[in-house]
Length: 566
Picture 1: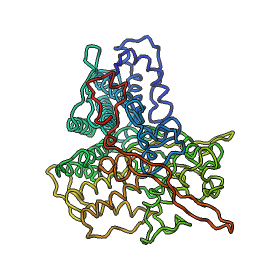
Picture 2 (picture 1 turned 90 degrees about the horizontal axis):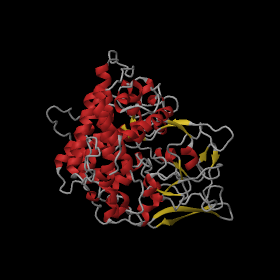
Picture 3 (picture 1 turned 120 degrees about the horizontal axis):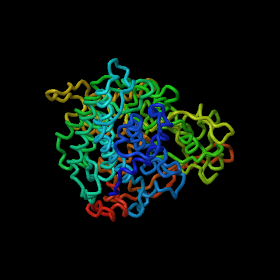
Picture 4 (picture 1 turned 30 degrees about the horizontal axis):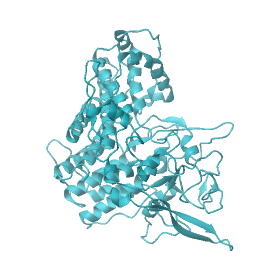
């Protein structure tokens, strides 16, 4: 593991302040000072201490650009193909993924973030931080409360960084103290159960110290950690821990813990489903909506559009190309077969909100994905490889690029949102007691008020979506299938499918076969013909359930030990 010394903090000072400029909730430092300060002076400076905490947020993942060229994790699953076949996002698909050929290798960055949280927790109690107005609740502008909420943020961030490692690599070394030169940094991995226990402990510490939810922070601080963010992290962690990949014996107690964690957040009764599915991700000037529980910094940006828009729009890369498998996953409202010639006809309304297909308008102009069309197969180097483009996340009305005066829109990467919590809850409750029963409440925990089926139906019944509700009487197996499909649709392109298939231990079923697209050709009479075709052959081996550690990290830290098969 890399060693980080205190002198590196001194060099971070200008970086801390630069990092604050990108989002209003990270702006509160005023004095840059000089670089010739000692450790005591650093931690006694009221602005530098706060900026140090702010800088830790820069390690929160933003997954809109995972290869430096616009790739998203969906293209490493059966959801999508990347228009650049040479991107590192293809490594998990083509059998070349390994210690010398890594993708999304977060090891060093997450441990850097963990190191900073540990430094902060070591010093915050005796630091020179001064209370500022951050919460909407009266009486919170005092030093004890400032220290409380600052520590709570650090505990949450440390939990998040450890989780980001665990979801990739499985068991990892837990680091809950500052490692100095005298410490042995050749750390072995803790057990998976130890990792889960520590992350839960940090989540619980954060819950005890943080403001309740996004609306508890004043407008300039929304985006900081909250109790509900820690609850959401705990919910996802325990759902993963209960799933077949990490719960080979099917221990029902793990499903109970996952259900209780999701129910704890639901019982807070602050977050809710947004009335407009597409607006969840388009923050604009309104910043946080009630569905978003936690997200990365909401930067002003237009790269989401330029990376993913159809290629006929000047400077667009068309990076994320939904597969035909993703298209087929969307139901019709009446259960009939979808139309090839009009894919959006009678479809789940989410389809039109996330997929660009032939004839659909983008920026008020019809997209042409047929062969020879301006956005079609092989028309340009970045043209769609599947016959489809992505619409989700993009603010097509407000954002421009590759023009003399480009326009931006504030967007974060949404990490936790309320729809996921409802689906986490449904999955755990179904595994515990089936689709239509309520689990018995544990003493000291909130009572369960939703069945698994009711939780899924809340998602399907969102305003503007209104998909037919699931009827009572499904078996546990049938409900499990419906929950998996609902996750695939509701959470598409948000990075969940890559991990969901792995935690369900279904990689060989979904990721070890070709992905397909739709070739549309124009006939002499101007009618269109449709033919499914293979876009990529995909490979999945049992070793691919976990990430490989890079060869550099293994060489630096031999006690780490490589994941099996690599």
